[in-house]
Length: 285
Image 1 (tube, helix red, strand yellow):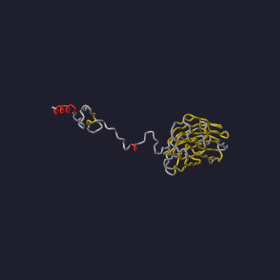
Image 2 (tube, rainbow, N blue to C red):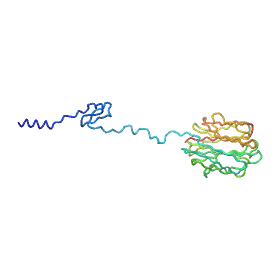
Image 3 (cartoon, helix red, strand yellow):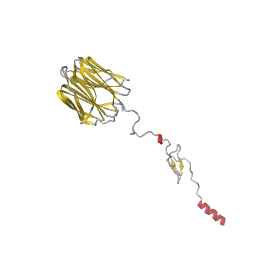
Image 4 (spheres, rainbow, N blue to C red):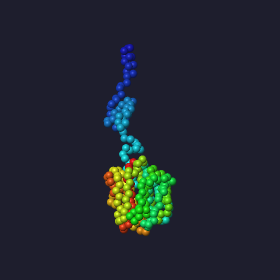
């Protein structure tokens, strides 16, 4: 009798093992007490869903999209404005520079005359009240070594937005031309790798500047008759034809990717007349 009572007691305590490892039902259900592990190729019933193990390759994962890239940021043209004045000692005009990394501003100035009067010096150029520094200058053409002047000026990290370019002269010039060109992706320590100047009298200008692959070449020109077009491979950024009355009373600018260790920039003109031209090679950021 005692043996029978013990058997009945043990039977009341017995619970069969849950059927772990069996496939989940089509609707994802499992026997009571088990859950369906759907992380497996063949979902099965388990006691609990295993915790996800850390991804061993997480440390080698790609950086977030906003991480700075290792690749060089190529130079790019961003904005341009130009202006002209008659018998003035200063010139003011507005330029709007968009936001961007590695901003750089280059301003050209051309002073013309009738080949007899000496032109004044350019005493300063500012943008939003910030002083630019002169890159290079050229004075004179075949008709007179003091009667024309061309400059290029620079400003690293100019403020974005709309601001005034102000060109100030030491005296009154017969004609004043100026162009402001903004860029992004330019080296902020030594932005200009090299510059070169040339002068002449004819229907075409040409100047060679030292450069390297990745540089952006900026060329500015002034001529007395009229400017037709920039040379092959150059992108015209502005052209302002005013008159044939004074030397350099027509101006323009163009850009081009560096063509190697030397890059040639050219322009074609309507008639033979005095010209000056400057090229600068801008280094990438």
